[in-house]
Image 1 (cartoon, rainbow, N blue to C red):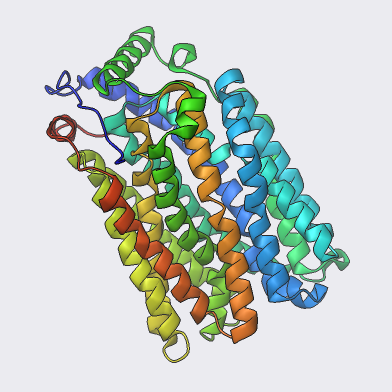
Image 2 (image 1 turned 60 degrees about the vertical axis):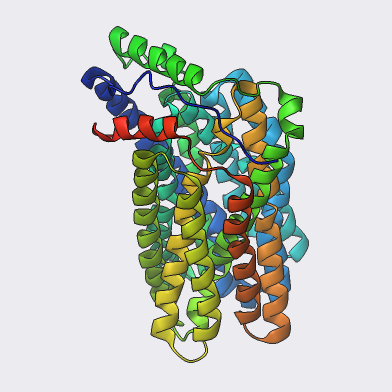
Length: 455
């Protein structure tokens, strides 16, 4: 059963009016910087373990396997709690849900500084996944309340590029803390990483309660005319997309949802491996100073963020999603495989290949989220998007665990990288098998939008 999309009407073929564009620009400037800031904090608190690893494994006498399991067990908690969290968001609103998530993950990050045993390590990483569950799919769902389908890929790309910004900031920041704070107050550098990077998230949870608005109808920072224009445009978009599944249980049994899960699983397999073992690969290539490792990863993530935005923008302007997802994933897969060959003998080329792998893998992610929105809406979208993200993110457990095991037993990251590359290469196969090309009507609607400055 292929993931089919419904015909999109040409009701807006003349293009949106300038006043509507102005309303969306205001929405973008109001919501996106704040949501991106939260995602930066979330990403830093999730992946700082990859940098803390450079010290804490020797301090705590943890093996590579212990680290891999601990890094990945985050996604078990994530898996168990994402669907309930997203349904709660649909019921009580984004403001309260996102505030709760942000405060709790920050508190858990701070608690990581007190880890002394593998069991404690596993428990806190699991709880971090439980607390953070629902943030990413919740924001994806939240943005569908504010933007019509032909504006979303770029908006998703802008939001998700925050993970690249987090990489740009987080790498040098973690490296500086590891080297500059080591021994201060009797604490190791890795303990200071968790403390100093967790506190801002706790504070951001309180700010979220005061700042976010649940729906356009409640946005007092829009004019009455702007609220009416946006709500009418969203209504036209819903009508243009045709009948979509609204029932929660039906969406969870829909074969198209599980096809999306298979596709996203392959992408996340690669993304998680690069996230949690990227710093180790850089060190394997001969760059041993933590600050240097941080700057190399920072540059790679900066390129990844640019790729996300440009690929999402081009997808919106063409109305095409499947190849804009599949081709970057394929490039990422080939680059990951190349890293496995290059690390032992060419550090510079290995780092270039690592950067290409990060760009390709990250650029595929925001465009992917265009696919489920073509057949899910309302509570079904809340449940379906969360289910896709939660099940697919089990790859986030599998990839680090496999990478850690293979690294410990082979003495190299190469075997793990090749396995991960094979998974990501399957992305394009699954997309071509299950995702149909864009309809002519969707392409015409996108072409009409391309004549205007995107939000």
